Length: 76
Image (cartoon, rainbow, N blue to C red):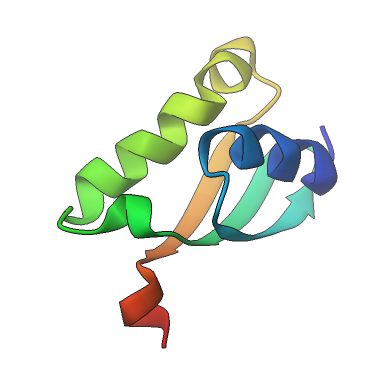
């Protein structure tokens, strides 16, 4: 799986977000700035991202994801 493929998957769930994905193979570093994280603590934010990637994590295409997740206010 490529970083662009992971970014495409995340874009489906986070339409109005700023998304950056680095990595290759099965390990990726994901940065997302989205208002979807507003009012959510870190674990629920991560769960939203895992939800978008879950099928690929279960299949083994994605093994590890490091996340930096912020709201637009936090990123400003």
